[in-house]
Amino acid sequence: MGRPVMLYLVCAILAFWSSGSLVTAEDAYRYYTWTVTYGTASPLGFSQQVILINGQFPGPKLDLVTNDNVILNLINKLDQPFLLTWNGIKQRKNSWQDGVLGTNCPVPPNSNYTYKFQAKDQIGSYTYFPSTLLHKTAGAFGALNIWQRSVISIPYPKPVGDFTLLIGDWYKYNHKVLQQRLDAGKNLPFPDGVVINGQAHPSFGGDQGKTYMFRISNVGFKTSLNFRIQNHKLKLVEVEGSHVIQNTYDSLDVHVGQSATVLVTFDQPPKDYYIVASTRFTEQVLTATAVLHYTNSRTAVSGPLPAGPAPKDVQWSLNQAKTLRWNLTANAARPNPQGSFHYGKISVTKRFVLANSAPLINGKQRFAVNGVSYVNPDTPLKLADHFNIPGVFGLNSIESSPSGVSPHYGVSVLSTSLHDFIEIVFQNNERSLQSWHLDGYDFWVVGYGAGQWTQASRATYNLEDALTRHTAQVYPNSWTAILVSLDNQGIWNLRSAIWEKQYLGQQVYLRVYTPTRSLANEYDIPTNVLLCGKAVGKHP
Image 1 (cartoon, rainbow, N blue to C red):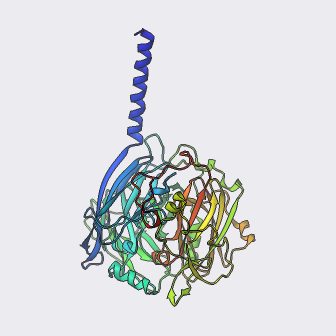
Image 2 (image 1 turned 90 degrees about the vertical axis):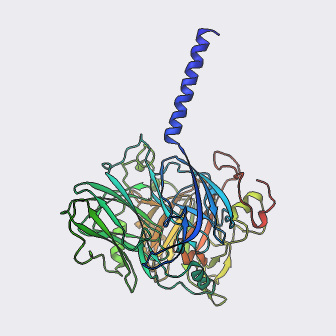
Image 3 (image 1 turned 30 degrees about the vertical axis):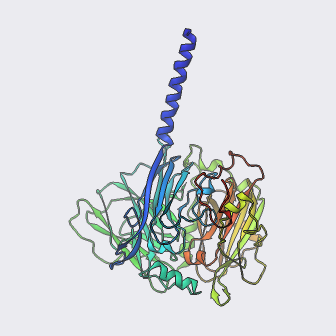
């Protein structure tokens, strides 16, 4: 073998191993086995049945780095079919792994399914939870945090530590009892309490003078919460994957399904301080407390709880929401500045106005979008679409704006094309706050307004530095407008994050379609896909 050839081979081998080590370092594969069982815990101070993952309540925390690949074997030991969904994870080109009934068959009892997905181009604080039945009201939820790659900067000094706080309302009733109530056409009762990390009074400790990150997520079922720490300021740095203008707040409203990341400096005299999460917009205010403990403290918590906003002050919450802005000069998961994508200059190709309602259908309480109350078919929409199975859903099953049709059951699918740039207006004509979540995407929240949205409302849109996020609130008798760049092929769930509304029909699916099949747009159907309904017997 000649010297030039040998030198070429050596260089090639070195290049191969060098690139391989980079992949290992920055695009790692992380393997998990999670077993889902029933167990007992005392979230409200008395023992009750909960759903555990690997014996833990809440479930294990997933700490990932941007572009990590997750291989997670889920073993279902419950007596009901079960799915997990990954709230805020975009599942790029991979709605096969979204974990909702429109894309996946649930995992039968005493069976398993292996999720395979990548945290592609994402950073931030997220969660996971069960998407089946009322399992979410029993647990099996947890934190999913994505850290930046080593080569990516962050627009704030690195904190010395971080804490995850999963806040949410809670019921003393078993999840099956709550499901029976909804199936009978009744609303869920008012929650029995609020918990932080599945507990009534947890504690979080740190050193005086140091700054810590707090990742706050509302994993509850129906109630917005206000979060605050006695005598401490909250510097907001990230919301659902977006770096934001770093405003400082005394307290933050976090609505159902939402997440926020704040920095807290332990800059007070050494003692213990209250951490508070309390319900918003409710007649009765429910409160959970935790303790912020200075390591050199010799004094227990004392004094009244720090006051939050007036419980029913919607305007306060709206004013705060309008201060959440994109940091245009900061990068997120990728090195380019967030503001390099000029969303406000892109022409809208499709528009939807989605009005929620709470009708009675056949004498039972339901929730609907543009008059259609969604019912899950036996066959996931994604499988029906892939296998061309007729009779599962139609593309004209819901109108693009409300027309006053009589409320009815249906399988609602909005038809869009890959690379559409769409506007969605959520019109809330009810007296309660709504919280809307879109799988597979984040979106720009460009406008809030009172009353009825009109064409003239667009003049109020923020087309410069609107926040991007995956879950947006809609205030009572108001509207919220979002813009979405449809660059992720698949079938994606657009739903109420308030779970009783979702369960009783306030959801639709977005079909993002192109007739050309290409791995550049979407991955192939998984070889381990679960088949159910009319897809049984089909071959991937």
